[in-house]
Length: 333
Ligand code: ACO
Image (cartoon, rainbow, N blue to C red; front, top):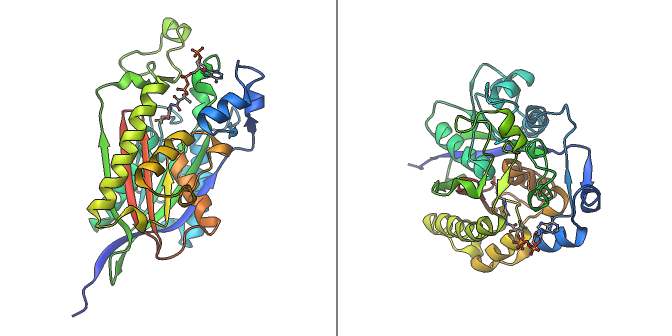
């Protein structure tokens, strides 16, 4: 008797970046920095900033609509929506609820995923499990961020690094002769040093007051050096763990899509995995760090550029505030 596997595959991707492109030279007009400093320290050349009235859910909707179109299914077939973001339109209702309404999707299970820059890869893992449970058929997983809304444009050490955008994927549960699609996923967290990367104000620890606003506590704060060291370590570990757990070696990979935070972090990862940089898809130079949107934007770009073919083994790996980290290994179909 032929055996069958329950597989979860990505059947469509989409992405969106706001039209306003801000170069490093543009940044140097209002903060004490230079194209040379930003490029050499991070690999970033430009980023997209959303319009003042353009929200995270607006960007999420465009990316989501494009992913549904690419998947070739009717929007009524979506029965799970997960939006990964740390810059929601508002604390509640969730951005996923706003997306559900704006895209006129059915009344379905819908929630936000908050794992900072690891959010989309965490979201894939959760959607994979929910689809494998048999209770859901098609999931729309979106990573979307309006980072410009929480950047302190008086802090040159952080404001030059981030950008806005959204990326999305449609996942479906299907019966296959052998396991394809998401082969495995893992996630991790170490919450012992939250101050390394945080937005201190606005939650129950520090509700908004005149003092918190005057003290610029509602903006992103980061200890870049410490985050850098942790990122290299956890990205490497999350990659080798998932590759080994699934019974592969790094040389089996056709493509790696890492979180786009810093080119030096990605180069260290490539060195640690002994994988040539040609096998990485990077767009940091054009987008900066778009947090939860970075992996799905790069995934959509790589797929549409023909860099991912059916049968390819693709690794997605991310890290973010928390600290959090996550990886997913996909046999693309
Ligand atoms: N322009 C010019 N000079 C600058 C700028 C700037 N934008 N920013 C800092 N400098 C100066 C500093 O003041 C410092 O000057 P000093 O030596 O006179 O004090 C000098 O440049 C060197 O600063 P460092 O912090 O040592 O620079 P470093 O080489 O560590 O690079 C960076 C900084 C790019 C932030 C790096 O540490 C990094 O990328 N860290 C990881 C950040 C990251 O990945 N964040 C994303 C996390 S994911 C998420 O969840 C959002």
